[in-house]
Image 1 (spheres, rainbow, N blue to C red):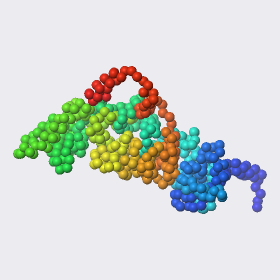
Image 2 (cartoon, one colour):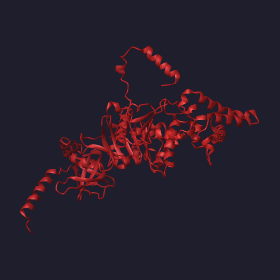
Image 3 (cartoon, rainbow, N blue to C red):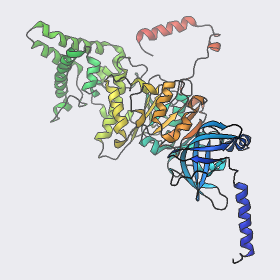
Image 4 (tube, rainbow, N blue to C red):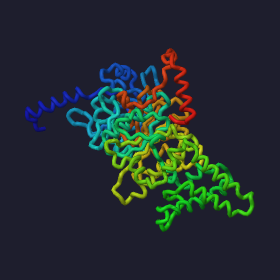
Length: 552
């Protein structure tokens, strides 16, 4: 064999020394390969020694939820530890099931991992050695690529490796934020939306806020709407939404009332200037009309009846419309001031077209009467979807619709409500038209079946309910199962993220959020507040005034 020149011999020896320095000690071997999930056998003594390692990532390498790596040719396979079981105490053997996450290339000189990507090209053979992962490996695995992304926290268990969410992938296929009450879910939602607003100050985000929490968080960079300034014209409702508001009967009587309302509503729309200019007018068309015209047409139709017994449906409809017109709580929608054709202005304001540096609309529906809250949410959601459909040949303006307390509007018990139908349709078809859906809920098991599975990215905080945990586990990809088992053990402001928005499943500790950017969702501190006394009479007086006026 030809001798190598001295310099090359020296370089090779130095590289070997570096590689030996970098190469970790094996902690086990592969005993079974079965698709995405496989089995390895750990050495108990090696795992015990690993727990004291100075690198927290390496120390967690053999634990449930930790990562390990296996060499296959010139590549490193990365796997997540799903479960551990003591196999033979005397022999010091611990068996574990692992889920493969992806692979990266191996740097020849140092053995380090780089160029990580999701998926597995080649599987290892039984007997292949298993190594703990290092902090340097984790940096490569979670390093954000050139795609647009936001940073939301640190990768567990490190304090310096940043967790990135890829915005286009996350929004393109919807996302869900799940977590029990008190886990920091609202603050996490505000953090993610703030980071998106910073990335895209000319974006278009509509958030349905049922409790009035988020106005405080976005008062500096959002447009805030509630019953005092929403000015949502009633004539924007389609026929189904009109029925939910104006019809009070069920069964066959409801069908009779609906037929009357359909006929009179179409005639009322046709009487307006906009309606009279349209060659083909439908009962669903968002054309202005006067409520007085509608009631007059109902009265006119009632006058054509022969028997007095046939007038009951007409009287029911007319009295319900008159009742809503007279109720000041409905003024934000059924006011006589909202009869002009303000559709363009409404869309421009609510959808932030243009955003003017305030890309998010917070729609506070906490002051909306509970009887029509679902209808208001249905109208807003449907208008987002309809605008996307009818503007398909225009320059595209994608819209993100975020729905807090989503289980209230898309319940698993299918009640046939208009809000459930439209949000379910957006979940299935929205991405084709540039509409992204963000669902926030504390009860994922109460969501309609299939809706969660339509969310490409799932951000799961601690879930205390077994049914919720099982529901989320069923919606998660197979490779994230090891992470999912740690959901009950997550601390506040920690989460598991998996799906399209991240390279591989990831456990994240969310960043803190400045006080001015947090939602008003803090729990009352009973021990402190119950010590405060004074001004009780003034509190009661002011409260009763607002209570009686049904205003905030």
